[in-house]
Image 1 (cartoon, rainbow, N blue to C red):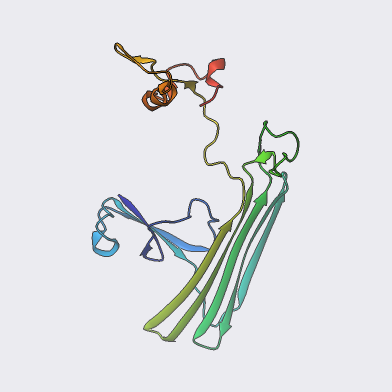
Image 2 (cartoon, helix red, strand yellow; image 1 turned 180 degrees about the horizontal axis):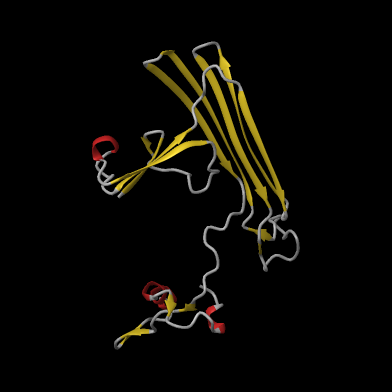
Length: 207
């Protein structure tokens, strides 16, 4: 029931959880139903992200560089360029690269036979945002925004979970599965994990 909006425009499909969170002017949190401005599905509220806009008549910029272990590299920067008295261009970007923290035990070495790295959960992504601001008079402001996000890494969507694996029931009452369909039907009726202590050795089996 909470709508996520970007510059007052509702996002149906977004990459906000993956891409870099950079160069934001502010975040607005609106509680309660917001259907008048954001549609009928905003019954619980709205989270509205507003990106930084170009500033007229000002030249400014910043650059932040980071480096760390696992070959980590991070770059964030922006530049604001005025074009005459009523026009300004603002370009901002972010890039993150690092090797993975996890290791694929099935790979024979640094790279397996298919050329896939044995290190997993790495990052290789970048975002670029270009905004053109035009203010012919004080009462009119137009912002044209173009944004690009690209990712090409081996990010792990879910980390290892501790779980006592539940293979599912072998039968339902007096009805037993046929041999051919046993694995499939047991998987469908499995609860995923059985009750048990996460400190036991069995909790480190397959999830």
